[in-house]
Length: 265
Image (tube, rainbow, N blue to C red; front, side):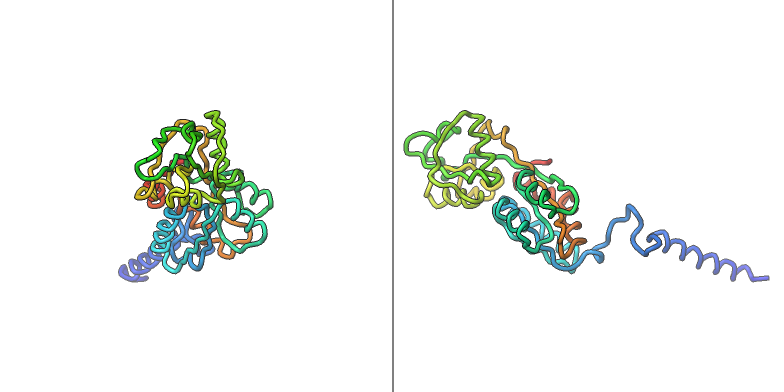
């Protein structure tokens, strides 16, 4: 017969093996509900994102890298429509975050998304004016006054499509002096003094608060944009892309987006 001490040692060893096995499935992966460890996510991640996400995504990218050592997030920011065209023409990227579902649909309809896009934030328009609002603009109708120069985004760009909806809702017809290909370009016209006002996202006006005023107007409620994100079908680093997309729902990322002025989906 074994001595009692030998039996106790055998039982202890068995308990250790059982505890180790509970943390992984048969393939050695973390058990369901345990979440992927940072060691499971590594390498470069290329994210194509709407220009209005610039400041927020740069911070979220830094946070993601800090929480997942061994990763490197590279961003390309531009108008969503231009990015969608690049993707559909074969530009290598892992993830696409658009400023409207309509723009995202051009990518998924072409078969370049991996799974269904998920809306992670919403955004709303404001009227951006020079600091102090020297023209005394208080609503959309003021943009049609003589001598008031306005910049809009082109209609094929999400901020331009939203602007058209808002102007239609207000029954305001105006002729902009320039049509820009992304919201940052429209905002820059105000910052440089080339126009008196522009319709831009609340988040962009807030990021440029040192240079411009952002005026709320009621018709913007008729033109709120959903922002969807999707992992791309030919993503070179699909696992990291999926991790970044999931990270956008984390409390840390949501805090960054909320602070920037984005709304919850």
